[in-house]
Image 1 (cartoon, rainbow, N blue to C red):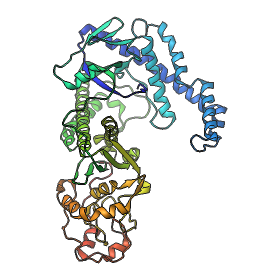
Image 2: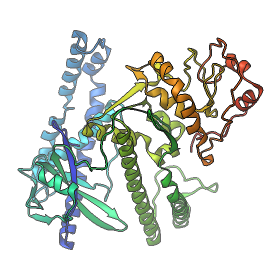
Image 3: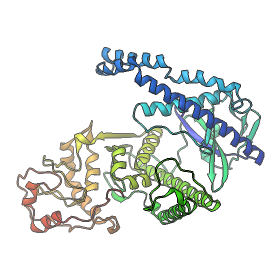
Image 4: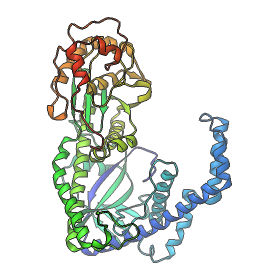
Length: 512
């Protein structure tokens, strides 16, 4: 990805490609793939050399110190010197990749700027792996490299007069008439262009992504609201609370409709693979260890293409639902508060649901679109707030995931747990819950949140509780939490204790 210094957005247009153009583009993408693999292998080798070098080990032993301090600067310089010694820098890889300009891979196929961007892409993947921000990057097999981009709009891949010009290729764009989004993108200065290949079924479609300078077009119906919005985002549910509204809904619920078709194709693909390669499987159905030779029939390839196309449609649908929900949130307010969640931990505990609904991707889109609209997104630390455990009366009580309702002997509740956490998020300032502000606002929100909790759909596993569950209970000084701690449990009425000890079905389960 490009490192941009000013505000930018992407304007995407489909390209008109003849069969001859498509053949040439596929050849160039495969050349780019081979260069990428070569750069990736070189970067991984240099990273291994770096980690084995004495200078790197000495740098690791230096004290970190606070940011900007002399110790931090000394440590940073030590790592920079170690990187330079083995050539583990982006521009060192650019210099190494120059050799491809004299080979058949790049001659009359790829320009020098495109080769540099391919090298940067490989280096950045290894750099993320070195900092443990991503897993180890994989080499691309044939047909898996789908995009190339330039560095500027003055050389290499050019955008001129609604046409992409790349060496001897000219690909006119299909521009829809009367589209304000496209018209806005074309009116802005183009920084550089990117050519993208997408597989629609078993056919290839090519697009140009113009990286334009400025802010993206904002539709009139997506006006930015005023006020603070509290979010509580889980693997499968999302709670949204403002001063005047509160909702709890299943996150990307519309995606569920595609799951039966996906599972059917996955089972069919597995049966075909086993029928084509019986010698590669043990008697218990597991794959034999070691390298195996796999034979794929035409029907297997057709099924795989159908599955890939359905997954592509699902990803596009998920992106559309994310954007729609982001726009809804921004209409409600211009300050969004939510917990800073470790989505890696989410993946370990709720891998299927996280991969299916993509909560981390939603938050990334929320930050990006909020920044473009002039809104603020504040993500606070869960360790200092503990909104699902903390109580206005001062104590902290841990609650299992199966307990979806919050009830306290101090008079708060019953209210749905996620809604309550989202409401508390509105009063988090500088990673701390402003208890005084929350206490002052609670009398007006008590009945409001109870009403919202009573409107939860039963299909979400959040069975309704009686509206006056805790009426008549003591409001004595039971120092407990906004969950039912042991101290609160003894002060609750019998009906409340029964519901607490036998909670409703959980909203989500590990592995969902």
